[in-house]
Image (cartoon, rainbow over all chains, first blue to last red; front, side):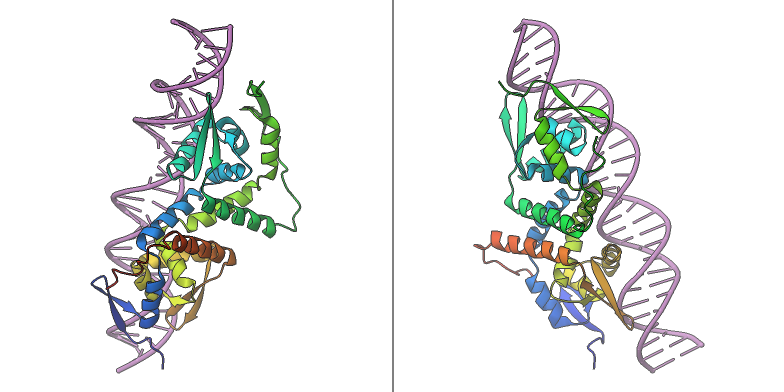
Length: 137
Length: 137
DNA sequence: TGATTATCTGAAGACCCATTCATATGTACA
DNA sequence: TGTACATATGAATGGGTCTTCAGATAATCA
């Protein structure tokens, strides 16, 4: 009745065990290219650090200079600079120089969507708990 | 003329340098709670590994057993099991046991949205390049 | 019951990453 | 020109994470 008898499929020249062979083939067909998956994982990785997340959420409303980003996110200016360097390398943020100041802004529309979605979700999840911005100062 | 003279704000009992004090205060007010940011970063972290990303994308269409997930994602069954354990601990996937088989499915609607968005974006980005699913077998 | 199969788990190793400290670069101002 | 300031950078450290290997658990079947 079931197709769970030992079935094998040759993938990448290597025989691997499968249960639902046609399903596996179909899913493999729909799977994005390895290169795209790697890039997507990288983007998610940039958002996987609370410090960077704070920086990016802060930038949702517009550009900010490094020291203000440090103040907003509660990190050292050095840590912020390192984080911004990484985000800049991935074209997630861009800089505008004005004298000795550096103003950063969100550059990647895709990342902005992800951030909006994430923030909206956390607000929705805690919609019944009106606690908001307490322990500051 | 400019407000870039040295201004200071007391945050968490610590004096920090800021440029646009009211803006900093406003952004800090809109900033999600630390706890929420940590949770959000964790979710993004779960999506930041190409292997896990493959597993989750595979599960977008419905449940799959461990060995099929290994075949689809091109990882060892042990690695897949470890990854699923992590995803299970975070309630991102859930298991259905049938005999000695274990069928996993996507459980978190939020993660599903993020995945859909990410996949749609990669497809859209490469919309002009009809190369799709080539090197299999 | 004993053997086989599917999945799970723990420990170990290698690798990656975030922060800090010290210092560098470059701008503004006197 | 020299000092103060804003940001950037490099090296080092400490902690975290992914994979593999070996073995454990549990279910099916003869």
